Image (cartoon, rainbow, N blue to C red; front, top):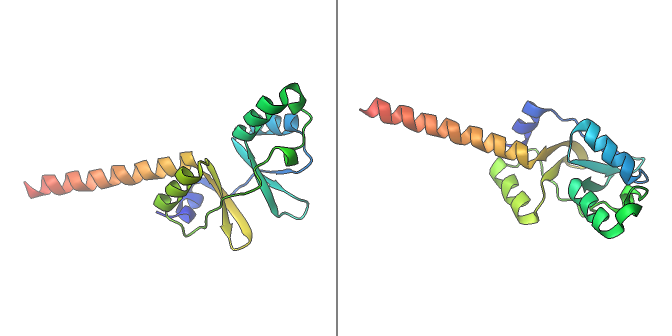
Length: 144
């Protein structure tokens, strides 16, 4: 299974946030959207970073009550790990584990085409494993 197959099932929508948005506004948007991360973009649409619940938690630990007014640009992760539509779910799982990230923007060349999460990867890996188990079970029954 590939990343493009995951995106076909879940959709290609990506929530973005501007560099100068405050942490409080960001947190409200993430709560309203029920998401754990957003892609940080400049006005031109380029990926400038990614901001997640982890970044907010680290900001709270560092800034305390000053977090609410802090700009996303000061909290975001600037080195963004990405994947491509043709990457396999197994490869993406390895990258997420190695990089210790739970969200990967999907890039087709220089174009952002989606985002996948560790939840997406786990769901599709479990589906694959259940299918494999069913095939093996059917094969074992047919051999009797």
